[in-house]
Length: 634
Ligand SMILES: [Zn+2]
Image 1 (cartoon, rainbow, N blue to C red):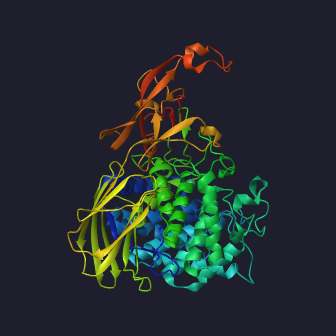
Image 2: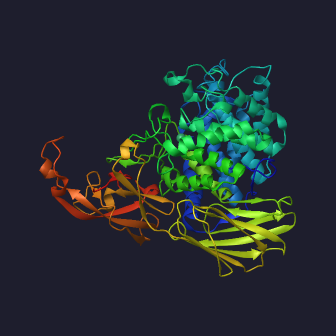
Image 3: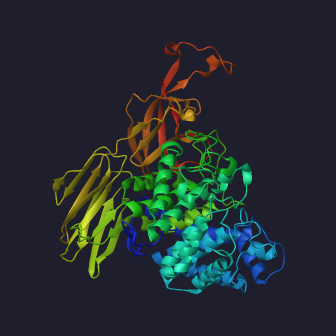
């Protein structure tokens, strides 16, 4: 969930309160609208059908029968409920409100008298509470309950669900802790939720409990684990000594997000240093070009360095989300643009590919190559991803802008930082009584021009910090029509002055489509190139190609220029990229699967046009072949 750092002492930047940023148009407003109008309602009906509400009724003693679905069913419902909360903050809706009220009542009714709440264990294994910390998911579900409760309390001032969550958290705290039962969650999640509960309530015991669970890791308490390796659960090393990302990708990234959260509140440097060591391990050897993470199906796990397959990659949608959660916390802790860059790459890549354009079907695995037949599903038996997408889209506006206080020691005024670009209105209180309103107009990510207009300010000087994306090697900025120097290499450009209403800042990021090549040790992509334009990674889908192009056999000529073509009619409106490629004469191969190497200069090949579309938009038409990495034609 999007955390609120109004008072966190070690945050370099503060998050803005809910409602401060309104996305007013463009790609993300469109995605938010589909999420609100379609996905959330689809989620309600699907959760009803899958048995999530029924399980709660069983736990409440209001129905009789057998528990349905995997053990962690409650968490799907909690994530969806969190999405409802963020949506109700963006605007009232009677139907969504009724769903929210009904769900909160169902959850409250299911809670046991002592505060425990987990419909699986209450119904199916009542004598086995905490009997399987590795895979039982009770603490994981508790985390999602807390996040939903915090969200709804924060946006609606309604404490019904927060009371349920606090009772459960207090019950957990009565079982686990120093001088009580040892243990740590097999699936991290509760750690960041408890820190957020501390931020919401001010109760230090929740922060202490989060730190306790982190301290318990790396002591072998979870046993050898699935796949014979405690790294699957990140129980192979204490969190302060970790140097690499390992094991189940979602577990790993929720864990480091929780570690970063505890740093933000306690300032314990060893925690920050540990996660800052792990970050380059992920980004320099275990990250898909789309921002996807988790190379292996087995264990839904990170692979070895440079083990980044195309067709058998995992890249779970939840792992992309977990990566954004972690990078958001690192950004707030450090103020370093590299974390916002990775959020951007992931948003337009392996996150957004997780949901169809109509908002009714979802990817769990986000492949980089399809031989055909891969399509999103309406729901999953293990349905962690769909409601996770919903809560991120519903709260997406929280991730675009931050602020900071004036720093008199450094002679620096209060500031606003803009991390992601979309048409929006930003209203921020920089100092008590100093209300600033900004409007952002842009057609990002399709065009690189961004126009900011100060709509309201109070005559005090303040600082505007604007992120120049790491992918951009040619940026220009004008303040009030006057050119301002933009340092190369990305990062934040700060302009401090006494602004007046009507002042403008113009940004221009050159969005030239380019070929990207992989590190030579990424075996699966060796000899291939991908296409990227601005923050958007592209793919070629069979449906966009003209005969005789077969995307599974085609080559691309990276020495010839790329051309962009706006297609308002396609995939909700996308900038397509056209390249020149070559088809290979398959007939010359006959039935041979292998053959002696021939003189490549004399191989017959036919020049053809290749049309690439944004990766996030693939598989919205027929489920044909697709590829991100395309063999070069050398
Ligand atoms: Zn998932």
